[in-house]
Length: 309
Image 1 (cartoon, rainbow, N blue to C red):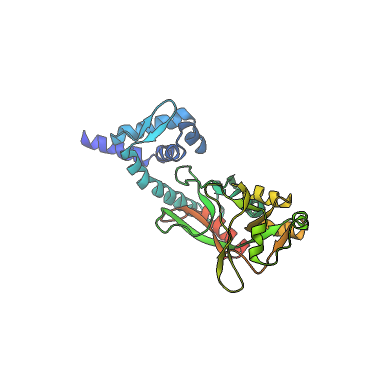
Image 2: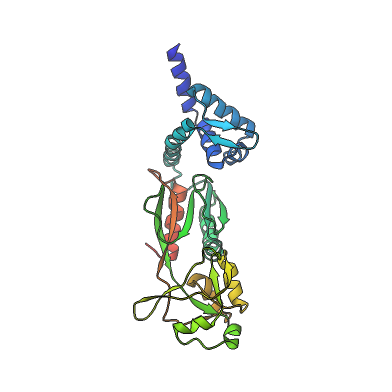
């Protein structure tokens, strides 16, 4: 009898569809969404996970009408199984000769402004090169939990925490400068020195509770904190840019966002010798022993296109 039970457990673990259903439901937090991601019905995913629980002899998920929760056993099992499935997918692709022709859905997130301004043109070229791929993109300034939301990667600004379960690769660098619309500058005092900013209206990124302050590096090599005089706060960088174009005030924003507007004459650089410290732009992804081909190809593609090797 024990041998039969052991064989049944082995069969269950060899059924990758059940394992994929389980990991997908955990990552999405929903039977409906988890099943959808791997092309199953909710009922089929539920039955596959139930078989897995029966053969393992433990409950992996706590179910209710509105919520799916992971048990302690389920979390431990997920932590071991998810990387193995990723490695299995890559091994399968290599054996099938698909390592250079990736397939499937690539799920990513990026800040709204950078995503629309920089990533969208790159995605068009990337998908044309790899026609068997699809992408699901979320452009938001909210910091997403990649594992919780089942995302393959994210594009993020700034230094990434060393103590993290994410791997990061710097693919570009950016800095920010001061900008204002010609219409605003025509109505307000001339800005010749950093101290003149105290007489102007500031448009800040962030919230009133947590604003993004301006620490500007000058030609003397010293960083100076600009006392804020905000009239508006923006959680969305594109809205911040649009407010500056509308002549609401002076703002500090990344060059990639402002340069097209400067070229079109809608914004002007203020105090060009002053700028924020250079900020790394990284692609981050869940820590795994091996990257899947689609993620590796996208990271290499973006790094090659925007210049950070």
